[in-house]
Length: 425
Picture 1 (cartoon, one colour):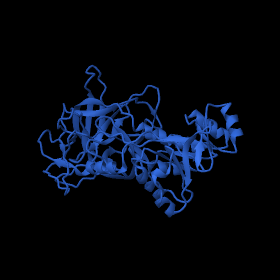
Picture 2 (cartoon, one colour):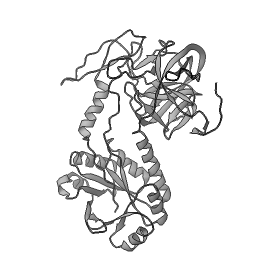
Picture 3 (cartoon, one colour):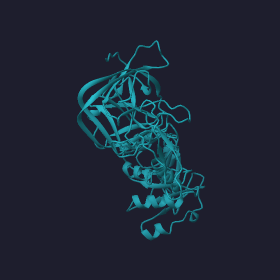
Picture 4 (cartoon, one colour):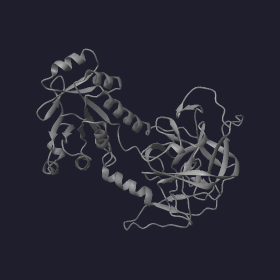
């Protein structure tokens, strides 16, 4: 038996699913004739799901901000390995589970590390003062799962053990407890199990109890949660002005197809130099020429850098199925997404150069090469809540246009930023 961390999820799964559907269905397109830019206007679907739509291929800079729909996940540790305990404490996980007959070990560890010992017994978990912290139950049959009700548990925290199955029970538990104000924990014996519980139905359970005797399991789960938390932080983007647009000949360009759908205003950070990455828009908008592909970013030739989790970069040529990249929107909201496929083909290219708006005296230029096609665009600044361009197709891009870039350190070693002199041109 093991314990899970406690989290209160404030948004119901049902409501979130409705929001998710509306992100991709409540879009009108209207032609503006402004620099060939893409315009998007959000609308409310009526009860029959009808929507109005005109001929165009773009989006408005509205409501593309990602909503914060969950609280940070918590982790409790269940182990008898001292090294696992110290590794967990060093990473901020101080709540540890002990069996009720193992209080001597809890006392020993409490004398050498700042931990919060909890004790698991018959149907409950208590603290060192014998106060009930959580209810505990084991679900081993479908009948037990069907009979599960939030009102059956007195404690605010509920720890559940699922010894023989994982995915469907976790989803059912989330649906059952939504809106109950109770925090549900699941016991996991591997980091991959923990990840499954924390991602079920997208919202995930409130937390996990990691029951392991292996230090690497603690490190792996911490790395996963760090990447999740990174997505909650705004990424600093800067306005840049286009200074050069030029046809550049043929090259091997890479389309990055993700396992996630992107919304208007979202894309990948790509560039010829790591010091400045351009926000390249996804192909989420329909056009007169081709159907929308909201999972795809036509990211440019294979030499280009692309932003990946952990503040690192990767070459487009290095991406492959299963790798992760960072999806970013106009406001700097970021999230991780898994690469499903990379398509590399020979295509005509166009060179774009830009410099920062707020530093006219700075002569540093940033550049990117992209496929010369109407469906490839660069995201431009969001101007409040008024309808405006979200992205400009490279076929319509001209000197003086405003776009969004990410400025960072240019020196890299295996994708990691380092401090050294480097000259790229």
